Image (spheres, helix red, strand yellow):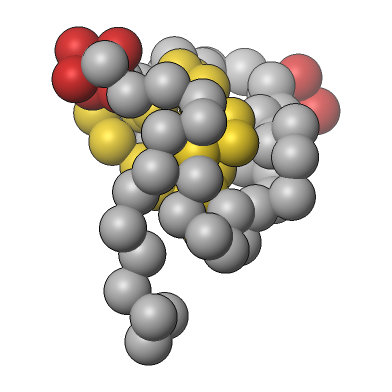
Length: 76
């Protein structure tokens, strides 16, 4: 699931979570004012079913790490 920051006005943490709720990748993406072809593409390193977007550095501030478990509702 690749993401880019086109037209995003605030920096974000992108947190990829697999189907079992395990965090597989965390990236902090700054605001980018570049042309479409120059934007950084952020993607997961392992298969994921969900992505959570938070304000930048939130994952670090709460101590979230790859391998941590996040409860994912079964009806998603």
